Length: 261
Ligand SMILES: Nc1ncnc2c1ncn2[C@@H]1O[C@H](COP(=O)(O)OP(=O)(O)O)[C@@H](O)[C@H]1O
Ligand SMILES: [Mg+2]
Image 1: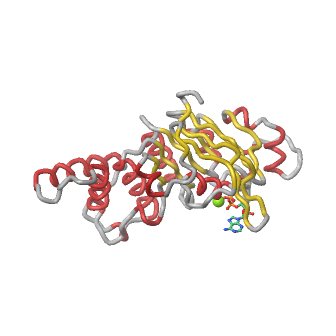
Image 2 (image 1 turned 120 degrees about the vertical axis):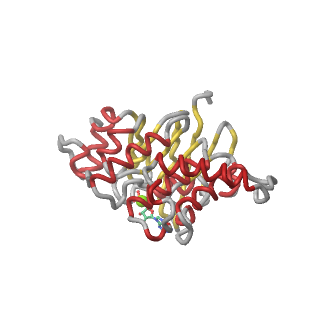
Image 3 (image 1 turned 45 degrees about the vertical axis):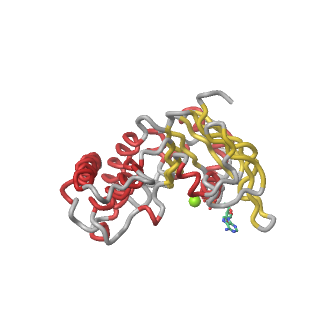
């Protein structure tokens, strides 16, 4: 394994009662890349994602992170190693303010053993930093609002902000633009770019405009298998990919079928 590869799966497989949802997927994610996982509904994208953080146990295969086998590690252990999955329900506390939400993430990162409760000065420091992060995602004017009070697109921006606050090495994003209007999609694209500075992002994404716009590398899954990997122009011209998306061979851009922008 070369030093450039931050995450690698080796023949990763998951069966559900005899049905193979993820079928021997061997994928390499390069450090610093935005790597998109795409594919038709039922392709195994979500299951694959869940296998990466041992949210679901693999039936076979391995997950290697920084050259270390993390396949059997607990999800909490994996988070401590610097892999953070965004858009989990637990990421945002609805009845705390936006500022408090970011502060908790910052405190978590500053972490263990540090008696940060005692010092008002340190708490204020966290607040300053939290405001900077809120500004980054254009939520600073809402810092006093409860998370439950803000709009859907803003909530997703807040989730990304808590992810930034945790400063992980590898971010896993599960459909960051799901359910969003055009304007929010543009904003989230920009935010994902920002999140990806100095770190690696793996994302499942349906919106082909987003995939084409920000991915360095794309892996296409179909029926649990890796169909193709490459740049957008590589995979969008791949016959097997076109066929998987269209159901039959037709010369069309894969973006047209699934573009939900
Ligand atoms: N917990 C489960 N039990 C049984 N089958 C499942 C389970 N999770 C997913 N599957 C099946 O595995 C296949 C892949 O699902 P999923 O990973 O959600 O696909 P995608 O995210 O690409 O739409 C689907 O056929 C789905 O029905
Ligand atoms: Mg899915």
